[in-house]
Amino acid sequence: MNLDLYRLSVFVAVVDRNGYSAAARRLNLSQSTVSHHVSELERACGTELLRYHERAVHLTPAGREVYLSAIAMLTEQNRLQDSLEDLRQGRQGRVRLGVSMAFEQRWFFDEVIAPFSRSHGETLLAVRFGHSAREAQAVLDRELDLAYVIRWHLPAEARFEPLQEVQLTFLAARTHRLADQESVTGDEIAEAGLITAPLTGDEENFYRAALHEFGMTRVRSVLEVGGMQTRFLAAAAGLGVIATFLPTRPGPVDADLVALAAVGPLIRVQVGLVRRSDDPPETGTEDLAGWLRRIAAR
Image (cartoon, rainbow, N blue to C red; front, side, top):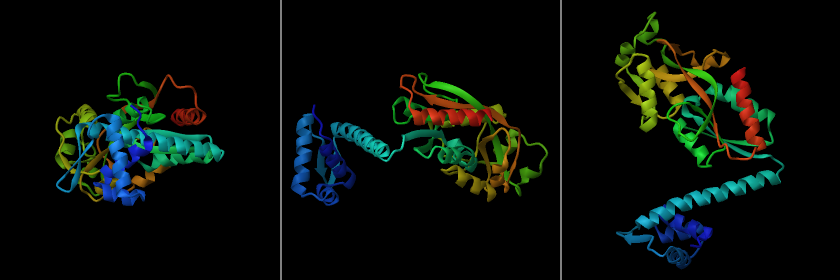
């Protein structure tokens, strides 16, 4: 099977724009040219990929497989173009770092990302936040070069290098009724209600298991919202309690949390790096891994 990347890009445009004419306008081509490229792609695949029904484009089962593969192939093409341009500009390249969504916080940028970028200006960082298991798998799938994640439900084949511990901390507004109590039980936090990320799959399993260590056998979510900073704001507004990960040694970055008070004891979890063991050393990735090790040791 000989798949032309340009024809794949035309096919993706037809699907994304839900029609040949819209794709033609987007690509600055004639509609007949777009139709020709899709037809040739179907001929190369030996099967029908699209059906036009009720004024809309519908993917066949084969078309869906081709579409998903095309997205991956075109993404890799764009990444290669970016990497080559970085090298032409004299930069060492681009390091793709996946980070547990638990660290989508100011202290992580202040203590890790910003200092690294200032001292390694020749290396560009591409940082994304997500579930630890997903980011670790992305390293194995070569979507990422390195992952900084929580050790929980990681793929069995992932090579995990432990670096440090962080603590799962319960936070509430200083005006919250729990903030005035000398000790808080898991049942009291459950009763007050938790502000959580939308919980699915492994993340929910981890979250509930961690809370179980605190003695919380039930979890009542009063608000589900994406993004760590938005959960901080929701807690500061008195909407409930949040559970978040913070460094085990408080630092000046805690000033961001002045509107919040810690309630209840702390639960420690292990954090570290995931990388592929079969890749040759790459300067930018090695520099970032070494930086994370030094930050953890400090």
